[in-house]
Image (cartoon, rainbow, N blue to C red; front, side, top):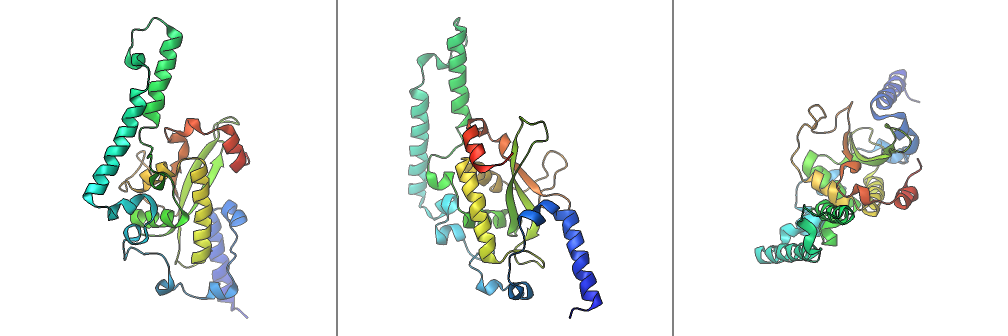
Length: 257
């Protein structure tokens, strides 16, 4: 039978979690660990994750960053081929693509759209290994940037009206191995596999990779450089240059809004 102090501590921790982590997460991400898993301390020696002690991408061949295991010649050849393919896209555009003095406003609009399309997709990797990711790769990228395996979720909301759907990847302060974290390692990786599946379906995994490979910094003047108790790190997928090409049918397939 738990003591009064233990009951108070449990209730207090739950209230603090609800305050900082949210009722929504409590509702949709219930703690499904067994009682035994809840009692056990996390044992890193049994973990299948790297914890920064070895190069996951080089040794496990984990997706985009696995290019670190390439030779200089292979890397240069791959970069040259990708540059050639992107140049081919520009080459096949109409000859008047860059003219600005066209008198035909319709044609001018079409050409302007083509220029914008090429610009929007210019940063998207052509190699599928770099364009998409797995839950394990997402976890390792998170650890590389924040030195913790933080919890993550793709959320959607409409702060600017019913026709302005916003979608973001939220990175929360709670992390694998910490007291009270509601997932075992297996459950955590299963959840991140689901997150990665959504990002891949939206063709925004490359955008998230780009963000996680950037240096930590304060964003927009006040948003934290890493997850905090009162603030998660939110990667706004709507700010991706290719978000405008995500179809309504794709959004309807993944979100209820």
